[in-house]
Image (cartoon, rainbow, N blue to C red; front, side, top):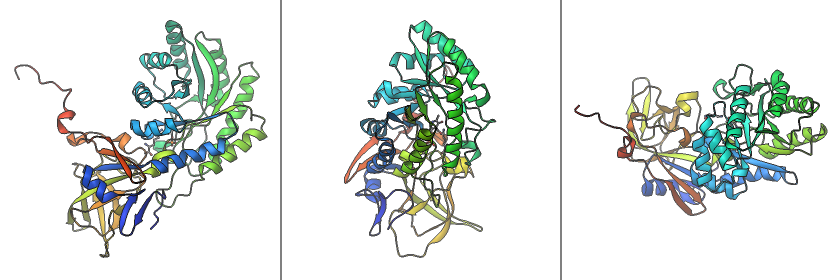
Length: 424
Ligand SMILES: Cc1ncc(COP(=O)(O)O)c(C=O)c1O
Ligand SMILES: N[C@@H](CCCC[NH3+])C(=O)O
């Protein structure tokens, strides 16, 4: 039976599989909560971008904040991707996974001097600079290091991405990027600074975007700027169109990556910019539908107003429902013929906000497993240790093969760096 999301996550008979691996078997082998990812799903997703960009100078930089397990990064590095990073920690992870430094772009509004130095020493392709103040500091750090920082400005195009306010980034009121109206001035300043080489322009308007129109509007605003900047003699070699393409959690129908990229390339060509290198920074659309979170049903608790299905995964494992009221599909790993009951699916954490799904029809018993679908992006990467809960294990699947790509965190690891005070 097919489910919304990835074709690689599907029922075979009554049992939910990721590719050829049955989820109850993986749960029995590795315990729960357990994240399971389909490699074929990730490769298909990145392939759609790459095919649409074939024949032109391009780079798909996976926005690794979506899912930063090093085996996931390795998968994308081997597929030819670069990476969009936002911290020194992400740089270290990307390099550990085999990323080519020359394919890394460094985004983020609050890069520290130490992170800038680390990235310069590694030889990243480009810093996506988000303010004039950051530009001055980067010039200083690069000059002191005797290096040149290649930069693009992240421009805030003031376009409404039509998504959740917490994940919209391209409006005037957002903290991200340089205001469109200031960009020419800031580019001219950049071009005058020692240790700085201007190489591109960048924009990222938000996440879980389900329409092409905001992208086309932002692109037009960017191309206007490119023309204005170049009229002042500052050359821009690449256009980085950011990430943000949405996925299907339930009934959303975002454009496919092929369709979106084709529409953007058409506009770029029509406006005479087809010679430029094109970058994208997709995160969610490469990994979101590739992952599931498998959890064991601990207790079924009938209530006066609600029935609760208490599972062993909680908001610390998967924060999206609590944080954004995000709706994520929850299904039984083994379908039974029993009549479904409507439950709030909740975890063991001591917060009323600790829920994974509300009012969900499920036919499950204690000891059986449920799976939260489309949990490959912003799920494990946002997990915390709240309530001193070790983070989940992770498994990568390819066909009938599976690899444990992250051990379950043990309680002793959680207070390893803490210290008792003397004489207490
Ligand atoms: C600068 C930047 N690039 C790329 C992304 C990836 O976004 P998404 O996962 O929605 O594709 C993000 C996160 O929204 C971002 O902040
Ligand atoms: N964490 C958000 C997306 C954030 C995008 C970060 N730039 C989500 O789960 O939807």
